[in-house]
Length: 292
Image (tube, rainbow, N blue to C red; front, side):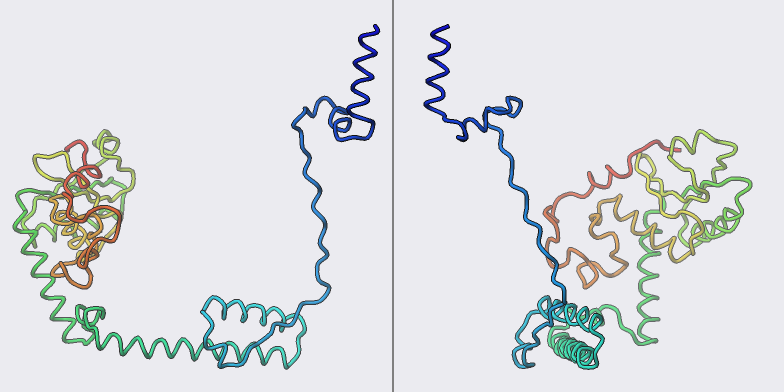
């Protein structure tokens, strides 16, 4: 008993009432290392919206676009709050400055495009009617020649159903593709072969799928009704991808556009991967499956 009183007395001498130790031991559930963050002080919202400070135009011309945009937004909010002619006029003066700044940028852009034609899409995609017609004819020739050259290696399969009205519209388009390219085309009725839908993951009809002969590679090239030019172009791109002629990054590269303005990899890599790596494994990864 005396020893207990001695310990209590020693503690009282070391940690007098009101000390930090006493506060920490007041509630044993908090533990020795317990800490309570102080409550954040409530900040009063300003009763009035501050008027933005608009610098002289000479100084404003040196500001960056994000800084100018922030000033315009602040002035807009201020003008919408006070609703005075002066405040609204200042807002539209800032808008006019931004408009003139954008027009100046557009003008310099035109000069840059004239001096650097490789950056201008007009060099690869002329906008004049006769030139566009000639370019379209050249692309059709390149695409058809390529598809005919690989007619023995691929085929198109269209999945349909008896009650599918759109299928009756799409099938003649697929048959036209056969006439133009010499490809084999096949129509599979999912009502008669329900296993085919599950095996190929097809639910929507019509669905047109590219199949590579002697391989498990396949790729959907059309879902629903697709016009012939789009079907031919998508099939052309899919064949090039499955053959490894292009990488996935180049999937939108059209006929005759290799290494040109519309080739994503024409001027070097655009992603972390090396554009010189073999694209066949990538193509196989997105197309391997059962053959019909």
